Each structure stands twice: as C-alpha cells, then as structure tokens.
Amino acid sequence: MSVWFVTGASRGFGLEIARAALERGDQVVATAREASAVEKEFPGNPSVLAVALDVTDEAAAAAAVGAALERFGRVDVLVNNAGRGLLGAVEESSDAAVRAVFDANVFGLLSVTRAVLPVLRRQRSGHVVNISSVGGFTTGPGWGVYGATKFAVEALSEALHGELAPLGVHVTVVEPGFFRTDFLDSSSLHRAEGQIADYAVTVGATRATADSRNHAQPGDPAKAASAIVSVVASSSPPLRIQLGADSVARVEAKLDFVRDELSRWRELSVSTDHD
Image (cartoon, rainbow, N blue to C red; front, side, top):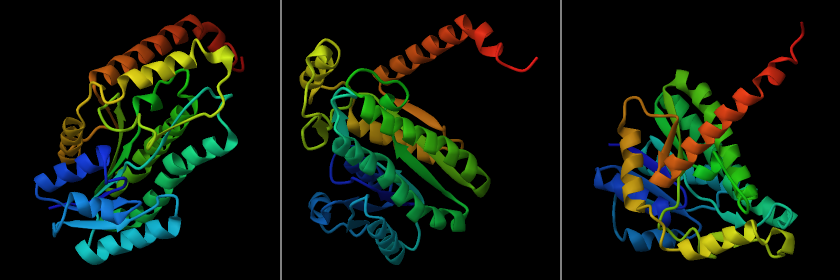
C-alpha cells in the first residue's frame, strides 16, 4: 500500500488520480485550496486525508506534509498537479498575470517538492510525478507564458531525475494534450486582459480554438489517471510520458523539426569551436 500526496485534488486530473490510487487500495493525502471541496468528493473515506493547501504558501506545504506523516506515517508518491493557465500573446500578458502563473506552476511546485523530498530521501524510495503539458515540450501563439512555466517544470524534472535516481526516488514528468477537464474554463484558465489587434490572426485563432474545444477535448481524464498509476507501478518508469494522441503527434512533429533544423545548420553550429 502506497501513500499518495496529490495537489489540486478537488477536480480535474488531481481528483481522477486520487480516485485511481484509492481504487488500487492506496491511501491519499488530497490537497486543495479548500479541504471541504475534497471532503465532498470522498465523504467519510478513512483512506483519504483532505488538507487545505495553497501551494504558493511554503509554510502551508510543510504543514501539509507534517499532517500526512502524522496520519499515514509516510509519503510514497508526490503528484504536483495544482496550477493555472494563461492564454494571451506574450506582449499582452501583464507582469502581474505572468507572476501569478509562475507562482502557481513553478514556485508552488517547488515549495511542495522541497517539503516532500526529505521524506522520500529518508525512505530511499518514492516517486515524484510532475504534471506538465505537451505545451512544456512544444508551444505556440497564445500559450507562451503558460508554456514557459511548463518548460520550467520539464527542466526541473529532468534535473531532479538525475539527482534523485541514486537515492532510489523516481521522477516522471507528464505531458498531457487536451483532456476533457475544466482547464479551459475561467476557473483555471486566465486570459490576458488587453488584446492587440496585430495578434488577431495568431493568438486570436488560439482563443477561438480554446473556446470551441472547451468540454469537447479528446482526452479522457479517468484514462489519464489510470495511465499515471500504471507509470508509478512500473519498476522502470519513464522520465517523460505523453498522454493523448494529440500530445504524441505534437511531440513527434517537434522532434522532426528540431532534427531537420539541426541538420541544416549543423556546419555553422560546429564551426564555433576553437581550432
């Protein structure tokens, strides 16, 4: 039996991952800004500890981990799922909006990770699962700031993978495509307030696509949660896992693009070394 610590567990991926972990007989520390939102989903379940947590509050993260240890005695799987989106051209995105999304998606993830890692290192076992996005591997107009936060998550995960592997702790970064959650709702996805006409063709098209796809995304969150549980159960889990056919296609296209561009500019690239 494993103990999962899941952030953003009151809805979306976090809720589905908590459910999937419970279905396999594990215990879950389910955190959200309001503990009551989690308790409503799992009323009276002794295998669930609902904890109020704003991931941007470092002291609260430490307290949540303390509560987890007091209740279950250990933490085996950390799922950094809590976050927010921002849709808008880079130039349209205000400093306050950019900082808010970085606070949640990057600094919040770091606060929770720093709180949990001493437990995993002491145990010499465990798994850190960072929910990124296909937008953390390849991004486009309108998703620049959000993608930048997820690119940061990718870098942090890759470094953690190398740092923690000798200590018996796995790290996996998850790259979902579009899944039928409420991510595209205003409760999760914030939009740049000012719209610049010059970006109507590029970012405007992205806004229209986001509106048309809301609650019509191809991905099934329950299947994604099941896939994540399978990754955690693996004896040799991947550093990266793409979820959804759209994610796989976009990653393959990015790899092809980078490989082609590298080949075309290779001679100039290697010419800069000392003779």
